[in-house]
Amino acid sequence: MTLHLDDLRVRHLGECRYDSPLSAMLAAKRTSPHYVAEGDRVLLEDTVSMLAEHGLSPHDLPSFEAAGPRRKIYFDPARVTAGIVTCGGLCPGLNDVIRGLVQELTVQYDVKRIVGFRNGLRGLTARHRDDTIELTPDRVRDIHNAGGTILGSSRGAQDAEEMVDSLLLRGINVLFVIGGDGGMNAATNLAAAIRARGLDIAVIGVPKTIDNDLPYTDQSFGFQSAFAQAANFISSVSIEAAASPDGIGIVKLMGRHSGFIACYASLARNAADIVLIPEVPFALEGEDGLLARVERHVRSKGFVVIVVAEGAGQDLLAERGLLEGNATDASGNAKLGDIGGLLRETITAHLTAAGLAPTVRYIDPSYAIRSVTANAYDSVYCLRLAHAAVHAAMAGRTETAVVRWRRRFVHVPMPLIISHRNQVDPDGDLWMSVLEATGHLVHDPAPHRPLLVER
Ligand SMILES: Nc1ncnc2c1ncn2[C@@H]1O[C@H](COP(=O)(O)OP(=O)(O)OP(=O)(O)O)[C@@H](O)[C@H]1O
Ligand SMILES: O=P(O)(O)OC[C@H]1O[C@](O)(CO)[C@@H](O)[C@@H]1O
Ligand SMILES: [Mg+2]
Image 1 (spheres, rainbow, N blue to C red):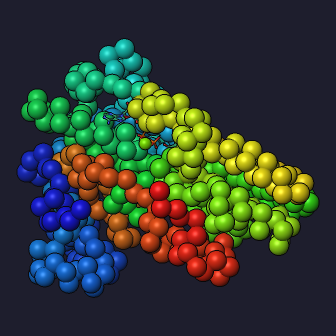
Image 2: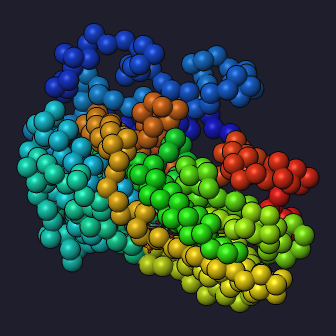
Image 3: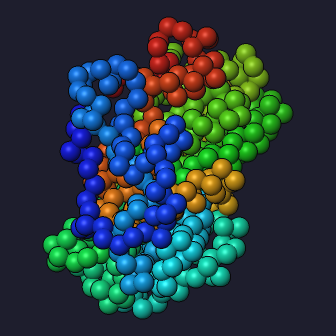
């Protein structure tokens, strides 16, 4: 998709007429290598060839509005009531973001009232809108020491008009939605309903996803903490597999449509022999198929370690009638089949038929990787995203997500965040690193992507 400058402009509620409490500090600031001034923009692309292709002057190149405080703001902080909601699956750092939002709103902008909606967008429905948490600096002081979200979360559909009514009834002018693709979709619909009614309510998204599958963001917050935890399970399984005759270690990791956790966790330990992700189809049978490859590893090395993303090989499950048709969860996300189980069974059967006596160690750490506390890096990241989100809201941006893009914090129009899915590029350098680390390129140089099968 080719994007132009106009596609990257974010919506403003109106003219910024109030002096920001941070204006004196900002007056002296100019763009430097370490600071992007408020009027400056951050380029969408960062290679010479991509930029040259546009043939445009720097001012006309596709670029994002820089995040950060403005000297003039849209809302009078004394009249602001903020709302916060977390939706979808958990990921590390949710509490850090909540805490950062509350601290920034109260300490820097002196906002007096912050309402936490419970249990995801369900908390904005008529039935639940009064069951909220008053968020104060005291209430959030220690929440970053635990994983999960103190607000709770949920899946399931809600009516946008009903949610707007809730915002009006609770007097919310600024809503922060911390969510994944579903949450950003819902926030976009909510913002559209607010706009249609001509209301003065800002909706700011803080994109969140354990799968790292949202575009226009370097990496999702919490992702690093989650893949570090996943890497521990890979270590455990590889120790077990190595200590068993004909040992087979399999770790199934989250990653519905994107195999980022599988790739990064595998690279972190560099112990995986085979990595299977949704983006790269593979065959079980045949000389280049998975079963033959597993057998070669076991015969040459004595054991094999396989890391598989939960969304990999769904076509193989469908072929075997092991998928529940069009089954979806409450939010409309497709329900996946158990690729880990299929691998365990087919590998055991294949190796046994080949005269080996496999010992299979299979771990599905599942929720254990996304419920952890954010590590120090992610905590910093979450705090800075929260700061950026508060500045964006106070400056009257709406239908806008705050993200880090090429190491800078920027504003992205929400529709772009849900325009497509971020996936591992089979031609990109991340997958190349995985192939290098697993020895595919050295041991099997013939097919460029050894486990990729044209179907
Ligand atoms: N297409 C959509 N339009 C409107 N609302 C949606 C849409 N998809 C999901 N939602 C709502 O957004 C909320 C969160 O969605 P979902 O459960 O898919 O999680 P998510 O935000 O994508 O997070 P994650 O993918 O990290 O689990 C749910 O309440 C769901 O009903
Ligand atoms: O069981 P739940 O809560 O639906 O979550 C599972 C899914 O949520 C995610 O963590 C994020 O969408 C996926 O990786 C996983 O498939
Ligand atoms: Mg999602």
